[in-house]
Length: 202
Image (tube, rainbow, N blue to C red; front, side):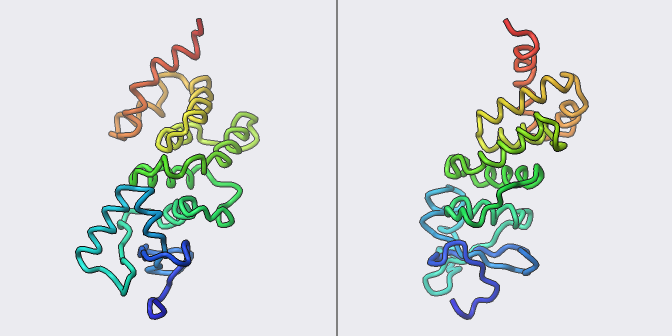
């Protein structure tokens, strides 16, 4: 292990090294992770580890895997710190863009259940800021992020903000659907009902 450069510890005793393109200015950084945590958290990570072992991609008892080229290294690092309960590594605030990137990683690796309520603090602060108007928040992006992260309470809250402030035939929704955004198409199927319910309560 000492001969492997650019190792960043997430799980100091971990037996998986995942190589990402670049992290904190370090190219080909290797994240040390817990095999058990990854296997429990995500069927995708579990499959990656199994395939790497079968292919002989190991260094002693350490399994070597690579992140996909289109994976966002910062979002992956954030995800792994949540999964490994490294609360001291988590920022107190997160931008809308960072939350959206995290949400896409969570959906890709099918680990929304495993991160639990790890994103609650960030969503709460952004929702309060959006409602008070103290910070410009892209509410539509927050609807998408809460949907992908399976956060029903904040999905409802951000949806209410969006529906009450955005016309049903807005460019935001129509453009996303027209451009073939899969997530937005899934959401669009629900919004006519949601909008009518919010704007015309019984």
